[in-house]
Length: 264
Image (cartoon, rainbow, N blue to C red; front, side):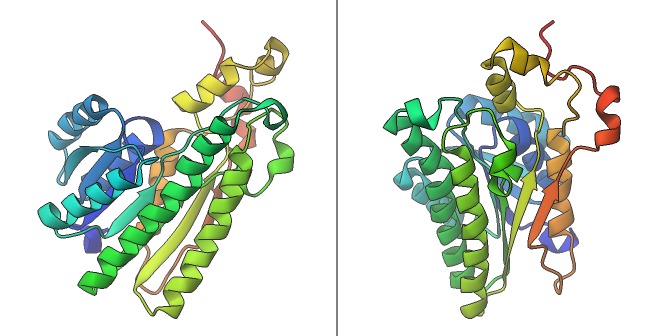
């Protein structure tokens, strides 16, 4: 990670869970981290905690990634105040247990806006920033195993799987375009299985009792596991590009991680 010390990273959906852990890991590695989310108070609390113990620094900025103008404003501030963005972590994501067949168009739009369009807009802006400065960069998309094996997910998740398949395809297209443009930017997709986050807790809590009980002994990943994967990808030598990482919980530990979502 030495090559990234002092460089600028931008993490979307940074206020809690995976995004917060990635922000902390990058700051610990000496990076300047722009942490964006809708809840500024959460970001400021995170920044205060991290800045007191890390070599890097966290810069909280309020941003709703459904609003393109807010994304553009963040990148403008990054250029004016920090010189531009070198590493982009597209982490923001939403899910819904509303079935597609009974769902609202607004739910479809929300998921696609956050999980797909925001990824494209942020990636475009990162490429433009790196290209303008003739610098090096890295885009890491926090994808999902749902973007590879939708048939294994039997509970309703609306168009979440479709959105993650879009991220899988977009990551490959971005990589090809960047190669054709002869830019020094790596593109990586990290696809975890189920991670113990507030988002997943809400999904499980909304399911019927019989389905919730099926999660009693399910092995599960932690947010720090995904942050570790991000650091691993960024730590590779210049000659190495990690294109895709699929992360699953270790099945043998199922009985050692009992009732991850059981109600107390």
